[in-house]
Length: 392
Image (cartoon, rainbow, N blue to C red; front, side, top):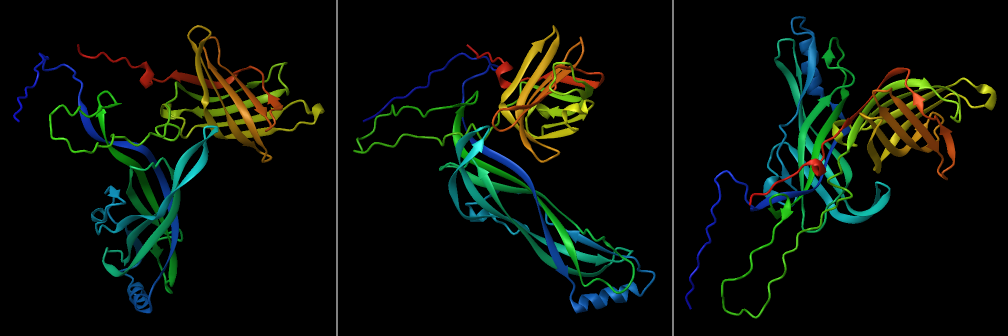
């Protein structure tokens, strides 16, 4: 049986946008971290003799200990042996991944636990003041770390050690005999972990579907399985961007409706680079009314709830940022907090509320007018703010 096929031609301007189905590596999770391990390095008796002999020559003193680390940056697929080239730095998965349930943004979600082993071959050398090598030795540094990832079946785990650096805490200069027989090496691995799967996407960022089997073929008697892509883990990655960001270093006097009266100061950096990662908030309160028995209080946030972040206009051209989370006082008490920051031409303001775990209000600053310092709240451009116009 013969077939005739033709491709429909549509008049499209050469510079127009078109719907395309592309094959790409989709990122399901992406984590970076810095892992540090201490390694004890021992000189052999023969090496000690060489070092002490060099130190007896004043023209070669002082000697220095230097460490050379391997080159990094190669992305390693942990399930492909050919990717483990002899580069001097290695990343290895230990055991199988395990399904776990973990709290994320105030609710429980399914994820996977995987153990990774990072290893680097390091050369330690002793050189004289002219840069000539006196002796050297090779050592191996390893660090083992568990990671909680969005790592569903059908995805692959990739690892990249972006940098390895080492330090000698006791110092690198050798001035006089006797030379120490051993020293501590401080090795840090900068790691980049990615979970990926090959998918087909329809631009803009939409899964595409395969074409229908519209070419006649003999009956095979079996039906091909439906193509299913691994599900995304939206609670883990990618994290939602902030609608606005805020920086504050300000203080003022609590008003009459506050639970306590005194001077309160705050430092806040909420959503730097429009991401809740690395956000900071701390508060200090100097009590001026000691009749109620309350003493000075300091508080530092340790967790921010993304779902509570609100950014709204206020006082005309002003902006208000509100967010909640949890933190710890100077007396090691865990408390929940509400924070509001106002950036307004009519004057900056802020309010802080602290609650115990049962929801009882422990502290309320009231609306504080800033008398010293500044609060700055700025709008962030998110994907929801973008408008796309498709070509006809």
